[in-house]
Length: 109
Image (tube, rainbow, N blue to C red; front, top):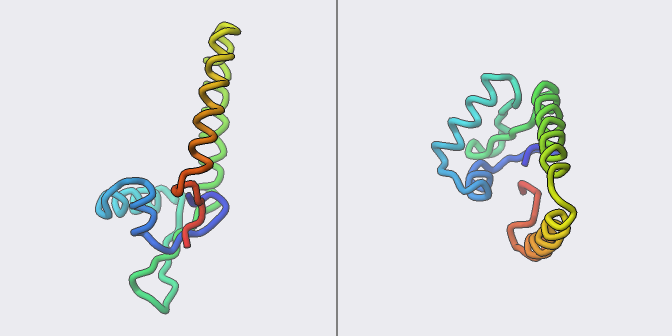
């Protein structure tokens, strides 16, 4: 949720990730300790906290994405052409369902 944008509402992040506020708070604290995010109060509303990825956090995210893509590619190469066709059909259905889902929005406002 933080890639390419900032989030100010921890409650919304927790809801979108289907986690409790204490769980999200622990995760945010850990990400901050690792230097992957910065958390600053915007000043006008003490309940709001601005959370942004740091350059190190962006690099970690990019590295993770590349490792994931490489692993998925390896797994897909092992599939038969028939299984690839079935997987493609299933993913098209999933994409259609997700595109019409109200949870599809990616902003944090």
